[in-house]
Image (cartoon, rainbow, N blue to C red):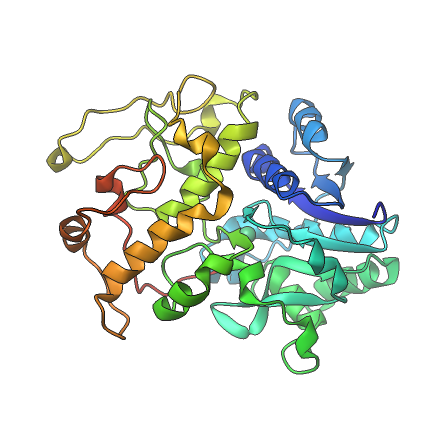
Length: 358
Ligand SMILES: [Mn+2]
């Protein structure tokens, strides 16, 4: 299947950990397709060399930017204009079919079946399900399509300032014309705790194939302590999903030195937690991690999530917010997810906070 490829975009060094971890998650799930990484001039040669070790092909492309500050401000995501660059996937005509995956996605199960789908296939966006989310999509490289998309971006623009608005404008019959082009949500599962329809997540979440860390705070931006334990007290993603991401990262990506400015802020626990302050030495080979990470199969975090959902739902059929206090009281006897303390487990709450997606 050398004429089909998974493609991602690393538009700056800040996304390299995402791109690398995604590539290795695809390899761990035994994909039989090629892996391609698009990079812009903002990605240094050192990083390109590292990406070349993980991907079959690293393709340098010029940067496309919507420069639409008004709509991007509306999304509270000024950085998303650069995502127009992903349109270059339509220029990869050496491939008959491609599947784009955002660098902030993680593959949990083999998803080669996506290549059975036609252009343009994508999953609904949780923020507006009549639109698709452009973090995962199936397309057929074609120069005519590329030029039409660029023309549309120049003439009409994107209604959200990013690639998702533009692509939804171009493939505007996606929501009504052909249900076969609707990917099941498990191919682009929003990793945020924010949106979940909790009973459905409890029923179907274990079937997740691709997790998407939408929003501004990416997995690699969460600090860990010297023991490799994630401190994501205010994380907008489920801690278990973050842990799966880090587990894959730890198995494969330990060898690159990123500039100090890249590192997340120092983790300072709250005084009431009674914990010691940790340094920023969470990354770069200094930290030693929970050994359970290396033996944890990728999807097993679901058991912990399910337990948390049971707590949060409290046996009722309504969508209910669980307070950290309630979680801590109910966590007795349950086994925490790999590498997570019970205290952190209790931090997993189902929030009802509608926000942006991307
Ligand atoms: Mn994304």
